[in-house]
Image (cartoon, rainbow, N blue to C red; front, top):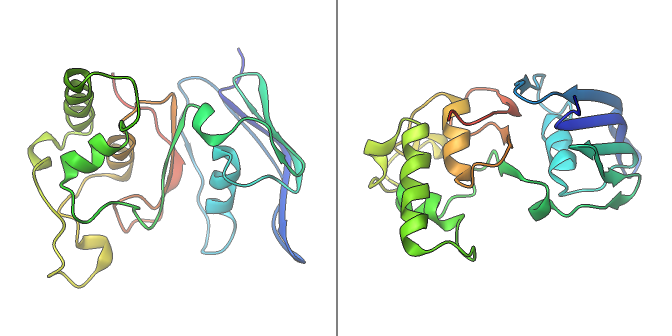
Amino acid sequence: MTPVIEVRRLSKTYAAHVVLRQVSLALEPGEHLAVLGPSGCGKSTLLRLIAGLDPPTEGEIWMNGELASRAQRVLVPPHRRHLAMVFQDLALWPVLSVRENVRFGLAGTRHSPRERRQRVDEALEVCAIAELGGRRYSPAVNSSASRWPVRSPPGRASCCWTNRFPPSTCASKPVSTRRFAGSVQPRR
């Protein structure tokens, strides 16, 4: 079986600082992967490389049998990798509700308004937060991570914010303050 994601001898260096050194892994269809480690060890960098946001210094990234990145080059752009990324800073629009933020990911697609509504409803349902769709950002709370009135396990939250139901979702400290990063498959 061809791995969904395969990382071969991946390294990333910024100036003289080595962030990742010779990382290899393979994620088979249906598998889940959690990348854990202390702050600054390269978890988010690994996810950025897999998502195609940065080129690796050395090594290769294969997506479903296709070479997606190699040393100093991103061959398959992020929007063609069928991945979704949940950034640790949430990257949400504070003027939009939970539902509107989920719908935002479908902007520019060829889906009809009806189909967009259905996809948003499905995303919220899959993530078990359908009842929170109308909630908005609350600046009254001090902690930036808790300003969003959504509390769900990291895996569930990450699939919800992506809303396109890609084959894989990369999440770096999503919605929760827990230390978590990985690939999450939405429930079907």
